[in-house]
Length: 289
Image (cartoon, rainbow, N blue to C red):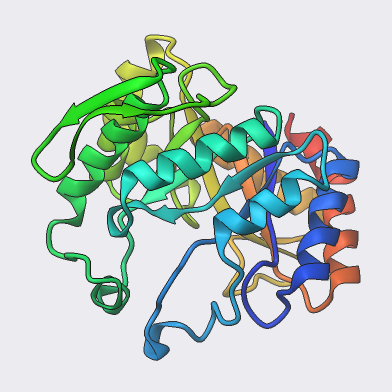
């Protein structure tokens, strides 16, 4: 079981110091990865829990120069409202500058208003998502010159160098909570990245994928989970209770198919966040591994 941490790059506690301190704590405590959260132009009605928000790729580029080991990812970049060639270049550059530590989860997004603000079509975002994932793969092959002819994206003999350090490009996960997303992840990604899914639902959604997973191809199932240490269950936390109780909850998710947990610590201060991170890695993670 691997563990990542959601950085406080958005919301009331966000800011440079909190983001940097959390990334450095993640590295020192043995977390596998640290992740930003993506939005570009949410309308006011959708933005309350995300504002203020640091741009995801820029933040990771900054953190790449401050860290040495921890991997750096986005959970999840709304791919269909961007040009995938630009995204491929940004993430390849991040991979080079970080020494091969970039990761990327991509989703179709949910805010119609954000799509409108960016001049992008909300209605066909699923189809464009499929094609955009193929664009990323094409450009990350390391052939230097690349071409692509699709319905939504076309280019010929584009120079693309430097290639990502990681062969074939950074790990590419597909974010979402439906069986459509599971299928997209199996066909086009290296992993599936659902949000706040319980063990029973996870097992059900993965059921059609069992033969695929049994074939032995490396495939990550990474849940984004809210966590709050405390005595009572919390409405905004997928995991809550004592370290022993949380370990049991994580084992249930592991047995249902999860092999990577991305933790959003539900806390009131940076000091509390770092204490919770230490508790997870010292008291919970050994009980789950």
